[in-house]
Image (tube, rainbow over the protein chains, first blue to last red):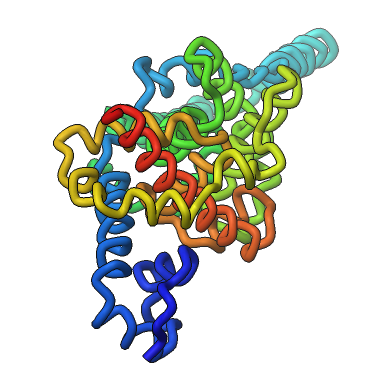
Length: 151
Length: 197
């Protein structure tokens, strides 16, 4: 058995990494009251550290940070402006150049064909409207889910 | 999404959500890592007035650099690293001392004091004010020592994780933690003896 008392490194290893200490040290610890007492001191200190209250901020860090996060810059809605303007321009130009020809076409087309064409157009519009409504509902649900997640 | 599934989100899912513009996911990241950030800041920064600014600064840096996070470590470890570096920068700026030359003479009069106090060690151990003494002695340690000892013993981080946070070699971290425990023990014994006298 080792008669010399353990140094502080060995004492700490005995507590924190008992699997790597030598058998000699283990044997010494079993018989040495002084080293046992010193180990007990360490254990008491370390247990006190472990059970001590952890520091916490006395302010709402999350709220403070969130209000400082850079707001994502919204891109200028080019598409939302260009598409309608371009569409209106095309319709306007078409009307200017082909108004007389269009009037003649409508006169030439029978009432039946005109009804069929309008009914077809209305049907397509209805389906598109339903699809838009569904898409809108999906997005609303996603936003609501996100708010629930926040709560 | 329920609170439970919200808590089950992985680091990858959280980061992806934030990068897609979900700011609430970032709130969740803050909640998850706030404890570690507080531990590091409280141990390294003694001025309470500066802690608030540093904590905010840390998370603004995290937000700014989140797209560069490579998932090579846990997200909290990466945030701990940013916190530690931010505190280091503050300490350098204020010309404070993180860790002096280990104070081998004045701080670490180890075995002799320990032996001298052996007779009173039982009293030390069972002093009802021991917890208070230990807390105040931890506060008197050098910032790096008190942070390392608390990360290891309170937050249960491994030497490897602490090494990652501090960018110190694992062996150095281990050695510092050993030294910190030793200084703490000696100081507690010294203080107790002084009070008794």
